[in-house]
Length: 284
Image (cartoon, rainbow, N blue to C red; front, side, top):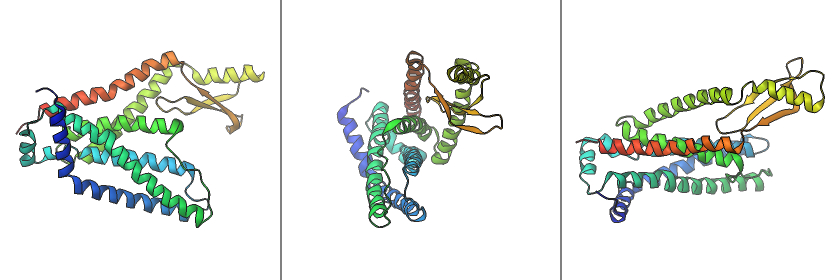
């Protein structure tokens, strides 16, 4: 069965009509939870809802809420009667996957951000006009925003696979799957760092000694090494105390980063393919 935009449109309308109340209640609950957290931050902190707190909050909220939503996108396959009704619909598996991708990767983030910024406007208004605290509002820009959406797309693609793979307790199992994957990628990142940049700490220490004409190099160690971000090295004195302003950032050349970026872009496509295969395997 070839892809049909007409069937895709009908399936999209059906998905929204069947789950309209659930989606509206979910958005309302999500907005209420956001406001509660923001009000706690506003009224319990001497400086209000700080910029860094906003970054941490929206990152955790978007990833967790997105994972929960995605884990329920194929919930009809967890019940035998609903699974039969879903399989008997005159639509192809590609169209089912396309609708799921549209909801999880486009509509949900837009709805989440709309609710987030409405709540942020309310909380920030109280913070400024009632308590007199002025904090910059995080607009999901900069390197933090790029890293957030990169992580969101990777987690969502894995959660989409888990949603069709697990029929019972999908959200719990998806969370476990995401956590195990994160541990794996973090471990793989350490191995890649050691292979690509050998003796990085010693090289940074030597560079610092040559640049500042020191008689002996200071001791440097990695203090930040997230996947697909620059490695940060901080120097220590003879007492083991970190030196203020003595940090260096180490990045790979653009030509070498291109290989890793291409690999990263292929990861969601691989998960989409496996999800499509699992959709085809659904049985009565």
